[in-house]
Every structure is written in structure tokens, then in C-alpha cells.
Amino acid sequence: MLDAILKRRSCRKYKSNDVNDALLDEILKAAQYAPTAKNWRGWEFVVVRDKQIQRHIAEVVHERFGLSAPIFLFPIIDMSTSVCPIEELSTVTTHIMLQAKDCGLDSIWIEIIESKEDKIKTILNIPDNYLLINLIQIGYCDEELRPHTESEFDENKIHFDNYTSH
Image 1 (cartoon, helix red, strand yellow):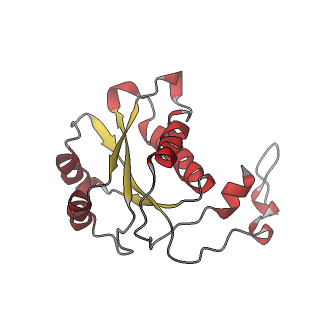
Image 2 (tube, helix red, strand yellow; image 1 turned 90 degrees about the vertical axis):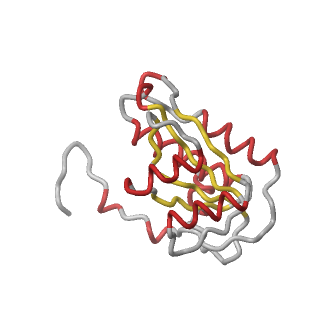
Image 3 (cartoon, helix red, strand yellow; image 1 turned 135 degrees about the vertical axis):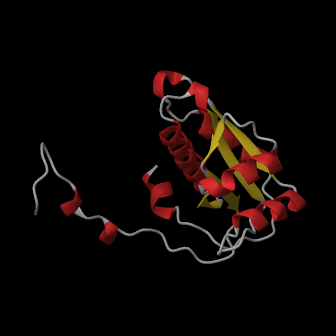
């Protein structure tokens, strides 16, 4: 697990190579094993491979890094099935991104700001009672991503029993 965490970096430029269904299935399986409050498991997933729909989403999002990945994955959650939807979507996103890396793929979390959420929901036919906080691009990176290093680990950020300054 630590290996995937160290190697997972945000990719902003993707190759055009498609992601096969078996790898996507592994990613979606890992997502559905994410923990949820009360084990309600209210999240669902919208996978967009259609380039025309992706272009339409890109027009709405105006992402400065570009939206070039072969897969756009939207974790969504029915607000009536969660006591902490933002946290649950964040946790499921982490599972998705780490499993993608474990499958040899790269990803990036792109925030969907509140003012864009309704437009994205309309494009994807997502019901109003669902929350959408991000888009995860997944694919084969077309840039060199350096893994995290041990030097980034900072013991001064860890406090035992109470907060004390170092």
C-alpha cells in the first residue's frame, strides 16, 4: 500500500491509450470497499468515456490543466443515504486514485465547485438529491511523475497525546 501512496501523483497530461475494462473494474471494486458512516454505502459512480460528453464537461469545468484522460469518473452520493457525504466521497476518491496507481494508471482529482455542479449534473442526468464534489481523470500519464520521497516525511507534524509545538 505504501508503494502506491508514494508513487501516486497528480497527472495533468494523458496518453490517448484506452483503459481496459478489467482495470476499470478493479478500480470500481476498490471504490466500493471504501468505508462509510453506518455502512450505508450511498455512493454511486458515473464513468464517462464518450469524448463528446467529455468535451462538454471540459467546457463547463474550464480546467486549467486540460481534460485529456480517457476516463472521467464521477463519484456521487445520494444525500439521503449519508450522514457525512463530503467525507465519504473524499474517502472513495482516495480508494479510486490509489487503486488506479496500483493498476499502473494515473489520476487527478479535479474539484467541481458548487457553481458548476448543477451543469455537470444536467449533462450526466444526475438527480438533484445527489452530491457531486469532484471529477477523477484516469489514464496513462504522458509526463514524468516523480514519486514522493522519505525527505517529505515530517515528524514535526505528529503529536502524541496532545498538541505541543516543536
